[in-house]
Image (spheres, rainbow, N blue to C red):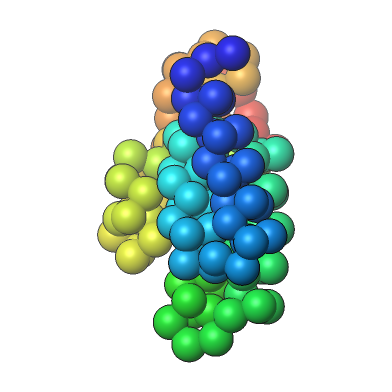
Length: 132
């Protein structure tokens, strides 16, 4: 198992355990840590699990923790869309969350020639592959 995958799994287990023991603040911290690793790995399953945990925290909390859990759901939802579309963004996870990433910096990989092109491209400039 890769070290990042192991860290992701450990963070998710710790988040679930903290939530089960009534410690939403700790669960939220571990869920954020897992979210960053899952986003970096483009792990759709991991991002989905973080969303489930964050939704549970949001439903069981109030005030600041509830708002933080909602931010985590939003962040992971955006990362999940990118992961499923094969889009890689150049901004940091925090930059994406705060909206510093622009469409100009988003990229994807051409499935035909494996070159990196802008996410908005409809045709690969290297090989002519047409994106759907």
